[in-house]
Length: 325
Image 1 (cartoon, rainbow, N blue to C red):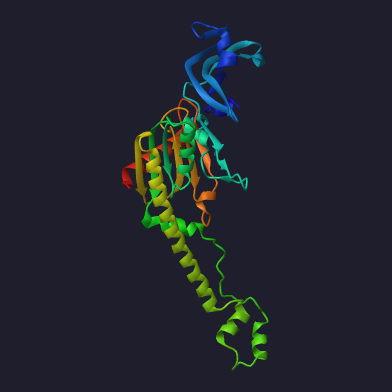
Image 2: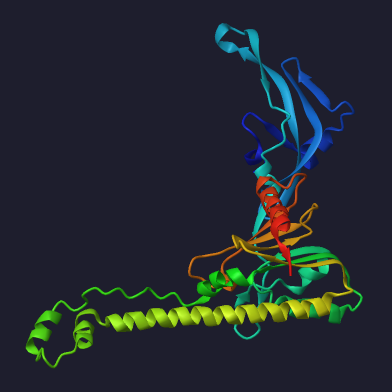
């Protein structure tokens, strides 16, 4: 898997099993008159398997081939390797999210486990209401009342855009379209006394519902969305008040912010330094945001990689447009 991380034409060597045993002060060897190679002193930390990392160095050199076809005449020298960093994407470890488990149902819920809050000092949460966070913060402080954080940023979806989230958590059963479901419906209608048959009864025979029934279903869904929106706004206000009361005096920099553009929910854990990670939860159309699948991006190499940096830049952009709340 080490060479899977190499650029085209690049040669990588494992520092522990190959480079270190050479013990060459000049870090250079000439094995014969036909082979010369040199190790780049720069080491790279790469991912070579699931949860497995290796430290590697680039190898460059020159080999002179022997021309047997010409009876052992002069050889042809060829260079190999380059000193560019390995593919940046391999510096990034992509893992399933660490989630808490509901004690009653056993289902993993989108609430970070307490251990993450204990390990990380700088965290940013981009979400909708954050109504589950206070419980976890409280658990940490009950276990260690002197626990402190350096920086906590909490981004709440604005009231104006909350309808978007409310619509996502409404059960999105396929809307019933008025198409003929009963091919024999017209014959059934003919057999009835047309004067006694109401339009609504005829529509129900043909379509399985009436125009009024379909309109009522749309109205009920709209009402449910508005009810959910009001509940989400109330939940957000309660969560904000609870978190402020709980964290005041426990965090050096505590900020409550509002944003309008919910491209995805996320949490950032010591995201500006090696060892940090970014939890990303894209929205899925028609799905409850609290149950959408998610993924973690871990910074485990010298360079975090382009994908990781993109999410870092995303948070920086969000900070510029978010409003205090």
